[in-house]
Length: 387
Length: 214
Image (tube, rainbow over all chains, first blue to last red; front, top):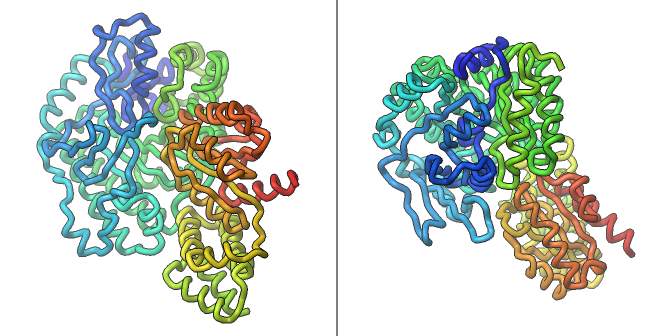
């Protein structure tokens, strides 16, 4: 059974030969450049023998983990990203600050490991009216840079490799207004400027959706998974958004987007939401989500993976679940084996589970621990699961 | 006192636009600033914090209430500083740890702590080791609080503590730590006295700690 067959079965809630493994299928399931280079060195691979790492600049994670590494770890997925738009970002201060095509400004400060949003320079911070929003210069979803060569790349992955193919086309319904307005203002707007917030969400979501559809028109027939919804609804301990925003603003738009997307692909729709999203899982399933990531087990009820599987396991695939906040970074290889065993025990039966770290593997995770994670899947992840 | 109830309600509901007028009206009725702070503003913040803790209110509600309180404090703050009777519980020096730029949670802690009568010195975000040390020397705080949202930069917490120990100041301060990935275990590992789950409980823990140390 090759990777693609294995993944297809798992995502259809059937048992393949073993639980699929992921590292690198999307910018929410990959690895920080420092941890990656440590791993390369540990495996005795020379830098010149790997593909030059391409980074997600903001998170400083590797978008193209090398084939040699993926083979050693037994990863079953390969990502397919769009190109950058031809309208390039603005950069200044020796490339430590840039603004993207939305006008969102990010800065990497001296002591920091990532680029962070600069809320004080948020592009819509002084645009307080719906008329103002309509006049703003929005990104062009038809910018050809994004789609150039995509079909060929997708076809090549499909015909020349056995990997399951994961396309990425982000739709962030609620986070985007926060980024565009600045975090605090965006959060407060949800209560004080409801009409404005909805207009802003409609504008940005429609741009995202148009881009996703353009992308799927090129490659939708080759994809196994579409990483699409990326939003934060909940914190580690507490919900962020009020229930009325969830039910009246987000869900209807998500449902509509899923219906549109499913016209262009049979790929499973992947939703990445950190935090304790337990109470939202039924709604996400209703809104067309097939896969839930990252299963942040350190957040509230998400740690009870047995319960998650029992309640939702036949309707949604769980993807992630190996703790990055306490286990992968601070634990020993034995701690990691135990964690992987538990998650496979809970989430693995009847398919519908992909093993991966909770969110990206961060820079403080050792190569030994990364290897322990993937070896433990070989040890415990064979079907039928009998642990 | 009807006006205090109004200020309470304005704060609780986060109506920051008109709260200053209400505070001024209360002052014109000869209600003391400390009374307005304790009976209306702080009370509202505690209630919002508690409802946030039980999941009945949400992050934007907290931010709005904090915004209303800040507006009110623009009027009250200068008056409180001049008032000898003010129940100052001591000084808190707070900042996001080196390498960490997140501050929404930290700012909520500041608002809650100020509401409880602490004098708070905010060192901002990405605060270097020596900046905390210098602030301890300068402000002689009862509590030094570290905020962090990233597991990676939380690795700097022991380095912050080491700088404080090396400067011979560890015995002079109570340490506190908070932020989404922080746990009680994490605090215990580095002998940090105060840990709390959220901003409202943090302010309560601050009070407990300074009372205990009296």
